[in-house]
Each structure stands twice: as structure tokens, then as C-alpha cells.
Length: 137
Image (cartoon, rainbow, N blue to C red; front, side, top):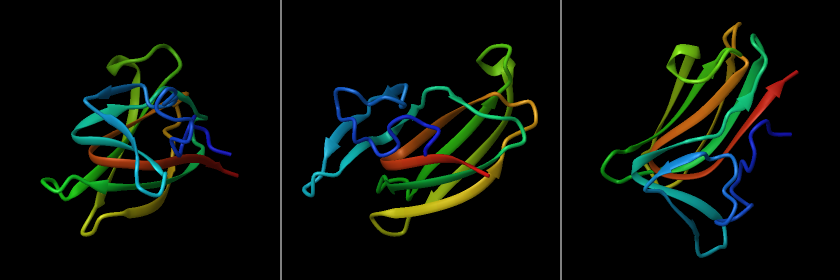
């Protein structure tokens, strides 16, 4: 099971749950009917995801870089339990997907900071196809 809502965008354009604030992003379906979120050279931020401090996470992602950037970036920002925003931030991971061709898939394992209770995904410069956040037991 994925910790984040709508990891593969299958809930459609009328319910892109899990993807919070999107700056100039366009939801679309490709010729094969697979959904995507076209960010262009813009960005998006996901909804808050509950996490356990010190937990191991596996993040699987897929996307395409914007031709002008050659890099689709995925970030994870962690927060403690006393509020959200920069004052509550306890750590970050930035996962650049260096893209030399159209579609790139990747997977990483990370450890959440010890004081983390929430996490948000952020993404820039390209097309998001999917992102799954799973706790590794």
C-alpha cells in the first residue's frame, strides 16, 4: 500500500487527490489512456502525508523531464507534529531524475528524520506519471 493518495493519478482530472497546490500544471491522458501531470517548467506540492520518525521509506517514481531542463526533480520535505511550514521543517531529500530520454523510472530508499510526523512531496520541471511512497517493514 502507498502512504500517499492517488500515487498513479488514476482518480482523474476531477480528483487529483494527493497533489495539493499545482502551479500552472495540466492534467492529461496520453494516447494509451495513461494519466499524467504536466508541470512544464513549473512546480507542484503534494498534500501532507503522515510518517513515523526514523522509518524507512521506499519511493518509486516515474516521469519525464521538460526538454529545456533535462531534469525532473522530486523532493520530500519532513515536518514535526507541532505545525506546518518552515518553522516545523525537520529535513529534506531532493531526488533529481536526470533524464536523457522521454520516460524515466526510479526507486530510492530513505530514512525519515527522527522528529518527523508529516511529509510533503514536491516536483518540478516536467511530467509526473506516478510516485509511490511506501514504508519498508
